[in-house]
Image (cartoon, rainbow, N blue to C red; front, side):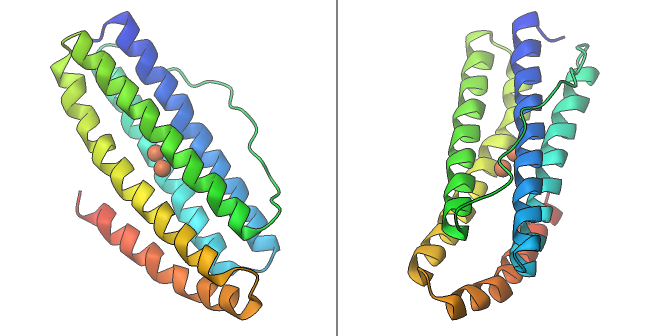
Length: 172
Ligand SMILES: [Fe+2]
Ligand SMILES: [Fe+2]
């Protein structure tokens, strides 16, 4: 059984994961209209993954005697100055999500809710992977700078990153 405060904290995280999915969907659209299909495909996949993160929480809350709250979402940014800015935003957002997961874990320990604490460990590992991936992408984008040819190759190569992150998911 979930306490009211844990239920509320989990519901807050449900909203954050749903907003993450929308943020990345908007990035996918922006990349697609800019003609970078590799980046767009990668961001569509990221958006789907965030929806999965949300669903996993929704089902957990409902199973544990709570009621998952499906709420209104903040509208995401739909345009960016550059791909560099877009990936900086992605990285910053993942860091923000990690902090939010850490706070959630902290609350479960305070309340001695070890079932929820155990459930959240998956999110802790997932955030390590997602931050690492965002950092890798940002490093590559910084190397490319304003080089159009570099961006073309990056768009082609990011497809492999999609494959890797998909195979990570299969391991679960
Ligand atoms: Fe997530
Ligand atoms: Fe994420």
